[in-house]
Length: 122
Image: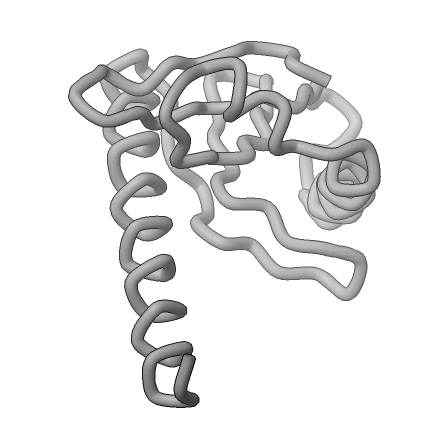
């Protein structure tokens, strides 16, 4: 594959990921979550979506996959550790951190299906 072909492929996957994150954020908002941050970056990792519902913070990893099982399997253990570490850093920076609880969720976005939200997935 030529360098320009690889670049176009990378852009296509980037667009697919952004669409999946948008769909996941929409699904969460319909479940009464407030989207606090998209693609929250820290020195230890990135969180696709940080959502809040009352005193609960949901750190959401979004996967665009053909089905639920492959979406969940795509979140490796090292990725889970990075997301949790980034989430701990996010929580520590909040002025009301003492009263917040948090969990790590996965949202799998599959073709022709509504996004599937797995609460407390890891």
